[in-house]
Length: 178
Image (cartoon, rainbow, N blue to C red; front, side):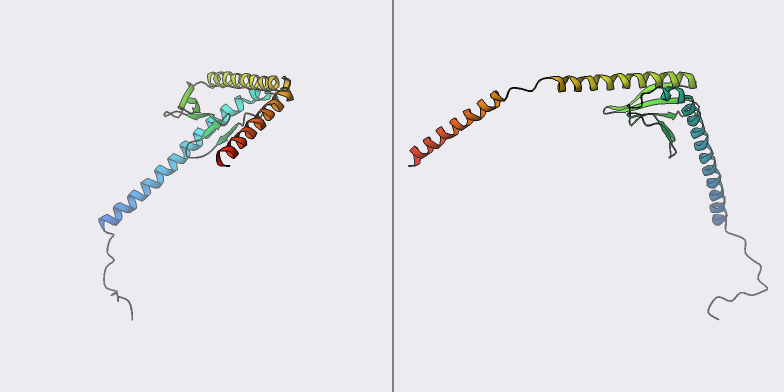
């Protein structure tokens, strides 16, 4: 009653060429996105293999050195994080391990190799350097704490000198305005 009435003797119309093209493009897009997801999973699997190869290295790190936080993040670009600034990602060919560090001057490539063992060596050198930096920073903190505090007489002398200058300034103001 309200809608368009169809006749039973009309033949169903075929889809328009534009609708057919849209349907075909949607199907191709879905296939491509499936491929992209499979490639991301393959990248993450390669990073997991590297992560397992690093187990021996991270077992030797002292328990009180909490500057490393290792783990694989599965985002648009899967990454194996070593610490807050350094991580491994796969190169454009999806077979090359690229070990990079974000610095205040931009991203710095520390190592790039298809070989897991070579990447593990580069990460080991990086970890050793970070541990030595940490030891030096802790030693400097200990040196600062070991120094004897300054004499209290120096602070008392500065306070008394400030009182004398303040009193002299009050006398001068009183003479000028009084």
